[in-house]
Structures are given as structure tokens and as C-alpha cells.
Length: 539
Image (spheres, rainbow, N blue to C red):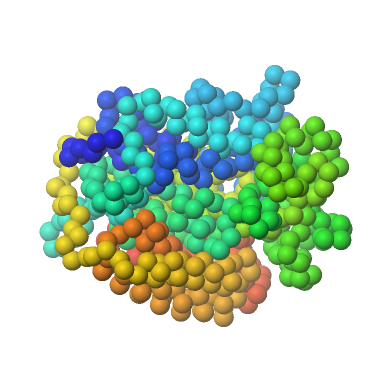
């Protein structure tokens, strides 16, 4: 795809369900709009593709919107923003209808959509395509965007957002972004009247993660550098059940395995979840992850086991073909034996502060999906609400952007990327070493169970790393690895600062120094404000 000097009406950074929902929504409302989509790798290689479970939506007469809202609020441990929860839940049926129109083939039973149940949900309300829902959604949306006329730039890493320069050194609206073409190593400028961050989360800040390698917090870091507030970064969700095998690379075992009767077992074959929560295996993810972590630490075992072998083999193969096939690669037959599992970093509940149209603190800059904080998830995301958020708020952002197309007639001139004072690096080992150190101390000190002492150690180490990375960034030409490391170090700092500021245990943030809820003050979301920026409040 050839880049042009003319500004785009819309530049979408990220190509998962959130980004493609916005792009397709804008094009549906205005087919003549000039739209560009940047993708770090192949268009389909984001977190959406690897989402197994499904999408939560009230489609059964025995269920209700109020029940879905109540379940989400309960999982969020008291700090969900209720209007956000209501807006997303009420938008779910329309989102499912749109996906069906896009060609997503969901599972049916007796002529109706088959609904499964997952942790935290009081009813069966998970629409799914076997156990590979994300892949089905991503491929359908990819086919649509490839046929839409949008300009698609694969293998492009966004470097930083561009803001308009105003008098007296002030900064104005977002006017585009710089991006590195990973194939030729050159940084290009993309001018745009509207920019959407749809870059996903930051779970690769941890040593063990269920996410693809590209989940490095790029959008959160870029928005922070551009002057946007971020919120609730202390709430990193650890998926309770990832396949434990030296060659499995933290392959996620869908929540639906427990929803369909899978049992968590100690190495001796005894159950333990009922000792931690009356909901047993169907407790929310934060509770299940901490329970597994506690069992592993108490027993000194490397993993626990998830057993659904008591179900008929045909049932298991039909409902979980992806998990079954993946486990079989490693010699594990889940129809006959339990799966070894461990928790792994899975989802970033915090992110760039937005309203319910995806608008950030910077004019013409939007954030949608896992990169954003809307208040939907609170202190813990409930299973299968993530793709739902991408779709519902992606559509809302598209509607808002559509109203502005044609009203923004000009944008400022964007200077070319300046590499005058940099050289090619002769010490790539520095990047590799710092990448490894960062992810290890985040896992050890800022993981499932925290303490003030551990967090202080992490804060000290991340400051040293950030200083070293910033010096390196200013001296050498950028590479994909360097950009991701720079962003991860910034996101790590935001997570640590947020965790130190929450002097209680709530949802996904558990600290041994403050093991209970703070009952004195009403619960608050943690909001960090960048220094030296004059921002437009979105709340």
C-alpha cells in the first residue's frame, strides 16, 4: 500500500475487533471517507484472534439485561461505572446481529444460538463459535475491511502520536501519528483528522502471558506521552487456566471448560475451589487465579489440574476442539485425563480514560477496546465482556467520528521523522537484557499477590530501566523491539504507581499489607494525570 501526503479522515492504530469495528462503522456511514488501518504484523494477528470463550449477550428469555448488569457490577468489585456497564450490556444484542451480518458463524442448538456459561455469570449467555470465537470474529471483519477500500498498512509499528502546535508552546488536537515500517526500517508520517487507538492491552509486561507478543501497551504509552489520563492500571487480570507445558507458550484454556463442568484439582486429585468461594469453579477470575496461586505456593507444586474427562468424549471434542487439538500436540488427551494449568497475565482492565464514544482528553483522539478505560470492568473484567466492549463502543466511536467527517477541513503540516542525530545500534543486547529484566521483576513483584515492599523494589528498578531505555531511544534508530520495550517500561511504571496508590485489596489488586477492602472512603478509580499538559476533561 502506498502512503499519500493527503490526510486521512480516520487513522485506526490496531486491527482487532475494536479497530475494525470503528473503521467498518465509519465506512458504512460514509463510504467516501478516507480510512487507514495500521497493524503491527499481519492484519489478523492481534489478541482478538486468540479469544476462545465468546461474547456475553442477553438472548435468552430466562435471562435479563438487569442480571447481566448485576453480574458485571459484582465482578467489578464495587468500582464499575454503572452507566458504562448499562450501555455496553444493552448494546450486546445489536452487536451480535451485526456480527452475524458480517458472516460470523456462531454455534447453534435446536435452531437457536447455543449459549454457554462462564465464571461470574448467573445465566447461560455466552454466544460462541466452538472455542475459537475470536478467530471467527477477526477473520469475518478482516474479510470486510479488505473489501472496503480502506488503506491497510500491515507490519507498521506506531511510534508516537502527533499533536498540533499552538502559540506559547501549547499543544492542540491530534493530527496523526508516526509509524515504523518493520520491513524497511523507515519511519513514516500519517496525517489524519481523527485517530483511534485500538492497540489492545499490556499483558506482555509480565513474564507469563496468554497474549500474543504484540500486547505491549503501545496505545496506553503513546496516549500518556500525548497528554491523556490513564485509569485503574493496577488491575491486571490473570487468566486462571493456561496450559502448563514447557513448549505450550501459555496457551489459554477457555473459561468455558469450567462453565461446562470442568473441575480444578490439586496434584493428588482433590478439589479445592469450594474452600475459597461458594461458587467453586464458577467464581470470578480474580478469585480463581488467587486460589490457584495459593495452592501452588502452599504445596510447592508447579501447576494444578483442570479435569473435564468425566464428560463424554464427543461432548468435549465438539465444544472444545481448539483446546483438545492443542493439548493433544503435547501428548495430553483431555477426554481421558486432566489438563495441567497455571495462571498467566491475560487482560489489562485499566487504560486510557475515555467517555462512551471513545473520546479521550485530546481532541480528535479516540481509544477503544482493551487500550481504553470506560469503567465497564471496574476492578475485575467478567468473562466474555471484552469482545463485547470492542463491538459496542467501536460502533459508538464510529457514530461520533461520522458526525465530524467533512467538518474538519484542514490539519497542520506534519514534519518528517528526524533521524539526523541517531545511528544504528551496536548494542542490541541492551534491549534484549532490559526486556527480560522488566518482565521478570513485574512477575515477581507486581503479580497476582503484591506487597508494599515488592512494589517499592519494582518502582526503583523500573526507574533505572526507563532512564536507560530513554537514553538508548535518543541515540539510536528505532526498531520494533526498542519501541515495544519503551512502551512496556512506561506501562510498567504506570501499573506500579497505581498499585502503590491503592491501599486496600480489591478485585485483581491483592496486597498482603492491606488484605481487606477500604471501608472508610467510598471506592474510587485510580486516575493518573500526566504532568505539564492542559487537558480537556472527558468525565
